[in-house]
Amino acid sequence: MLKQHRKLAFWADARSRAAFEYFEDVISFDTTYNTNRYNLVCGSFVGVNHHGQSTLLGCSLMKNEEIESFKWLFQCWLHCMGENAPKGFLTDQCASMKKALEYITWNSSLIQFIKQYDNYLGSREQAERESDAADFHTVIPCATKSSIEAQFQDAYTHAKFREVQAQLRGKANCITRLKNSSLGYSVYEVGEQVSSSIFNKFVVTYNSVAAEVKCQCLLFESRGILCRHALSVLSFEQVSQVSPRYILERWSKKVKRRHTHIKSSHDEPLMEPRSKRFDQLVFRSQNICEFASESEELTAILHRAYDNVMAEMESLKAKRKGTSSLSHEDGNPLTSFKARQGFEQEDIQKIG
Image 1 (tube, helix red, strand yellow):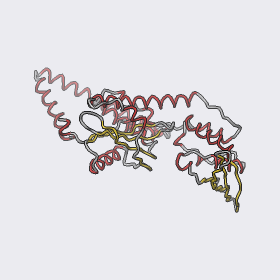
Image 2 (tube, one colour):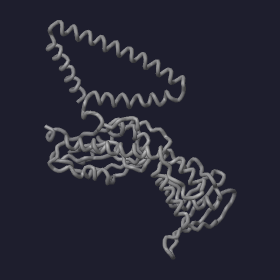
Image 3 (cartoon, rainbow, N blue to C red):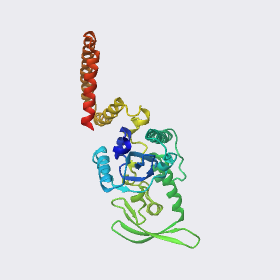
Image 4 (cartoon, rainbow, N blue to C red):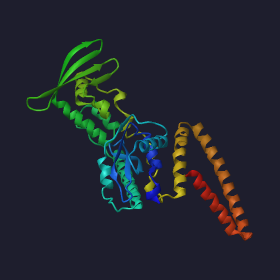
């Protein structure tokens, strides 16, 4: 049945959908994995979290790689992510995802594949939680007396702070020369020594009025980290604190990201309807809670709404329980079961 009829499938759990809100800037999509005896191709949507780790933002199974298949898949994924298109989209394979799936053989069943997918979700979730805990409980010491280094130490996750430290160390290999300056706008030439006799030259501009520094190497624009050339110019200008525009929330360890409070699908029984409903409710309620937490007044409104909704649900549950008891007393449990079963089948047909 599956081999004959199933051509396209896509899924993303609640945690992945919430994570996309924070890691939507650049997404990699890859379809290099031919999964199993059904000859279905696995496509993975992969982003990068605040620790620089790969994070899975959706997965698909496709019978072919035709244009219409990709069109359906991308529209489905975009709708799932709230119609927010990523700023950048790459079609390069993710090495960590490949490693996670490499054991799946030609004879693997879809159940084995999905279990491994859930295992991968679990490993990524665990890695992120461990890194978050390390950021919270430990501190990487500064290697210099630079107040700029201390600024990034306070704000960034360990992984990104180490990248900043690497750039600060690289600053020792740079020679900075002022080319011209006018009305607070300066142009520098920074020579970076890459060998005993070779220097690579970079043009760096600095606007002291706007506190803005730009380097032609474009490291900040591509990786969100100030380069050694720009840091060398800031040191030359005796700047003690960088502008907040260069301390990105993207890499911050202080931002409360709501996806960290949502369990991934590997924590719940596979394909259980209750789990699906739970995921949907959590995904919607997170937005409401985030909005309500902005003030005491909004929080009070939400508490009252919760109380009213809870009372209504308890009343409905009690009413259904009473109706169920009456059905048993009437001696028609089979009729009741068939009617209920038929309703569920009809729903499934409509959804399908």
